[in-house]
Length: 101
Ligand code: HEC
Image (tube, rainbow, N blue to C red; front, side, top):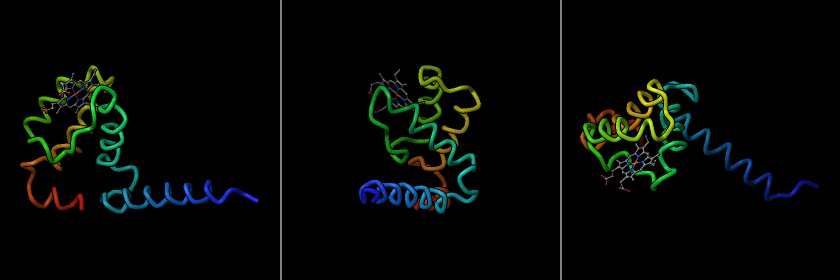
């Protein structure tokens, strides 16, 4: 018999992926999803990940510019991360920030 815990956590992981995919418009391969993955994977090593809505678009541009190289992000990856963050920034256009719900 397989352990119920392993099966349950696999199901949870799948559900999380399904939610993330449903929230974006282009599915798992969308630039927005890639930006989120890069942000989560690269920007939380020195400090807690900030909520994208905590900072303004301008502030995110500053942060990604300043920390991108130290987070080992290529210029192209920085662009994806910045797009993801700015779409959810404090001063993002209302339509863009509601898309995240
Ligand atoms: C090499 C370590 C390191 C990495 C990697 C890193 N940061 Fe930082 N970050 C810092 C330090 C140090 C500070 C200043 C102290 C603090 O606020 O924790 C800071 C501060 C910030 C702030 C300012 C917070 C505020 O309250 O104004 C933001 C925003 C930020 N980082 C975003 C990012 C983003 C986005 C990434 C990924 C591209 C990133 N950081 C990756 C070290 C890092």
